[in-house]
Image 1 (cartoon, rainbow, N blue to C red):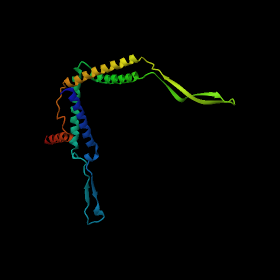
Image 2 (cartoon, rainbow, N blue to C red):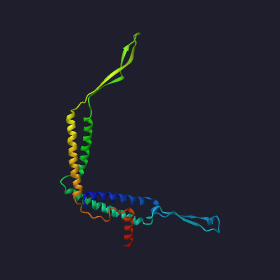
Image 3 (cartoon, rainbow, N blue to C red):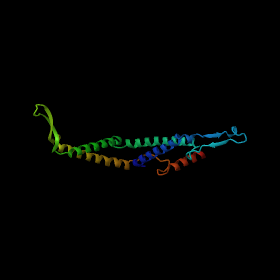
Image 4 (cartoon, rainbow, N blue to C red):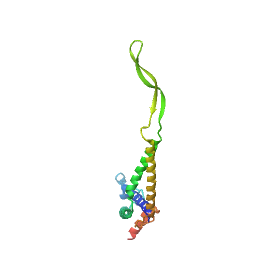
Amino acid sequence: MNMKDAFRFQNKLKALMCEATAILEDRRNIVKVKTTHLRSKVMSDTQDAVVEEAAPSEYAGHANEVAAFLMSLLEEREKLCRAIHTAKNSLDLDMDSEVGLNRQRQDLAEVFRHMSMLRNSEKTIAGGGSGFRFNGEGNQVSYRCDATQVTTIDFDRNKIRGMATALSKKADEISMSLDKCLVNTEVSYETPFDMNDSFEDILSDFIEKSTAA
């Protein structure tokens, strides 16, 4: 399989483990609860009634198999991680580092693009100014007046725009290289089941094989 499919299967294994773990985390799947209504203590000629709580899933009673299933999935994840690591080491670029760096390039390019969109401006703010003056009685009082606000960019727009362009170009080039790595890099790993199989089919098949063994 190529690296793209390897990552997809890695996510598949993780999702399967989450579902299987949820089964064991539900106490009702791993214990049997039986309640006896002691009716004979109230009426000697009446039989006691036994009520067993219904399990929430079809996998109740298979806790051992589900636990073994989880262990097998973990083992597969370990094998796949090692295979992916080996495949990455054969590449000319460090995929993990470049993915993080490319995200940073894209973020910075967006910041610079936003800066380059700013323009010098001037506007009048009605009642936006204030001051103090003496009134006819000689007392100092405040007053309001209009204000003119001038905004001037404090950077070289051309340089910032150039940085944004350079970063975007570099990010696009690295993205293309990463995409090629995902498609063209082989990962030495064989899947134990089809990637499109459902959780129910995979676990049921595992339990069936475990029982047969």
